[in-house]
Amino acid sequence: MSSLLKAILLSLLLCLMAPPSWAQLPVTPAPAAKPAPTQTDLLNRTTPSGTVFGFLQAAQNGDDSIAAQYLQLSPARRQAEGEQLARQLKFVLDKTFSGTPSRFNQPEGIPQEGVPFGHQKIGTMAVGDIEADLDLVRVNDPNSGKIWLVSSETLAKVPEIYDQASARQVEHRLPAVLVKHQLFGMPLWQWAGLLLGLMIAVPVGWLVLIILEIPLHLWARRRGHLDLANWRSVSGPAWVLTTTFVHRILTGYLGLPLLSRHYYFQVTSIAVIIGATWIFWRIVRWSMQGVRRRALARGHIGTGSLMLLGERIIKAVIFIAGVFAVLGSLGVNLTTALAGVGIGGLAIGFGAQKTIENLFGGVSVLGDEVIRVGDVCRFGDRTGTVEDIGLRSTRIRTEERTLVAIPNGTVATINVENFSRRDKILFKTVLGVRPDTKADHLRFVLAQLRQLLYSHAKIETNSVRVRLTDVAGTSHSIETFAYVLTRDYNEYAAVREDLLLRMMDVVEESGTALSSPTQTLLLGRDAGVAKEKAENAVKSISELREAGQLPFPDHHQEQISSFKGSIEYPQPESTLRAQRDGKPRS
Image 1: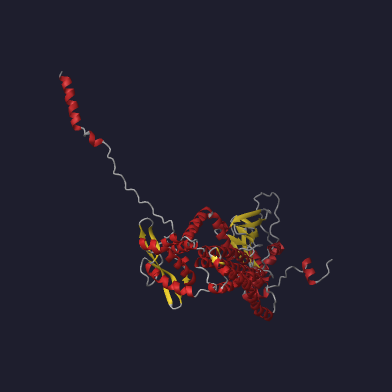
Image 2: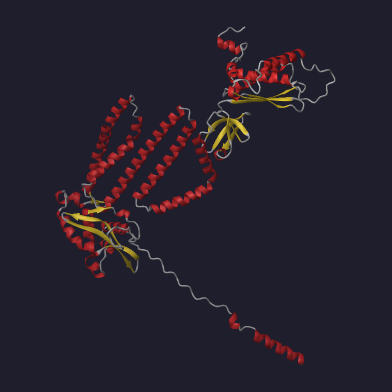
């Protein structure tokens, strides 16, 4: 019993220590407030331009009750006289309005000086001595949200302007058939006027171009050339521009309805944009091609290629600008379009990063003209002749006659060594003379080698350097350094061959010999130094020493000048020399 009692007491104690069950129940969150539904206006009155064109469209279609919804009227007044007031306002706008409603396409309106916030001055309505502003006001409609309406101040002046405009109508003097019947909201007499204006504008446009071509002929004749191909290439778009401008001037006397006038100006604006873009396109083409031809004629191949790339880029910019201008004339919000283009450009940029890198690398290579087509260059560890410099890669022909394409992005970052741009080529070699050669023998060899290089016709005198660099090891080392005056590697190879042969003659005349690089042990007797020649070399050095003419560390400048060109190249015995001098070859 005691153990059972202990178990019961322990259970009661745990129940008292445990938290109440209601504390462990999940708390139901309060319901979130539902977002207010987005209010949209079915009549498109959210912008000032939307209100104007929506009203005109409804009035033109004969929906006067809907047109009255665009007016700031009380419900009772809209019911009583809204339709009549809408018809009068439509007539007044068609006959007397001047302005550009399409540019007021912002929901908040465009800030205007002297116009209070929430109002927008779209244009003016004037007839005779009466003038009034077309003023729109932004109101809060319980069903459509914030919308724009034609203000009550403007509506108060509409009847007076309507009476004055009705008395000045031209239609009273025209046949009733042309005035009564309409097509797309315009009476037939205005359509006839548009057609007649087009028939007048077309020949007038050609006449203007012919008149402009007369001074161009005179200028071309004075400059000594009669090439008017560039002018003829832009005559087509120029005719489009002149015809459009003449037709717009003539159409101004017709008094088109405002909505039709808006569409007409959109169409003619697109024609003007196309004509102007066409002209700029042609001008860029023949001007850049002219610069490219002049650059190629002067041998600037890189500049010519850069002009071709620049022409394509400028044409693309002109085309894009023309497209945006057309969209702007159609009332498209360019801010959204530009934002879309920016996002698309970023996406293309990230996706085509390597392509853009190679493109700008090609521009850098062509602009700096570090290399040109036909140059022999070393790109890193590859050497070859440049065959083409494109927008993406540079192609070189290697000595193995393989074609290697190197991306321009790589060309712009690696070290490029251009062998074809050398003004002279380095000649450098080390002669190893037998280690048993005496000091005077070496002095004779050094003096003769310096005189040889100073005397050679193809060696730059100021760069000559002949020095004994080492006497240790298996030979005495003599370093020769000079520049050969040529850019042609084949000619350099021939001059180098001539110099090496003459240096061998100098060493042989000194009585010594070039050391052998081999380590082979010879069992026969070595001929050693030629005794007679060695004595002559020592004697020659002794005479120079006694006369104070020892050419060490170098010859005197007057002696160097007298040596210059005394060794003819090619040598007189050469068949090339005989051919050049006109002597018969045996």
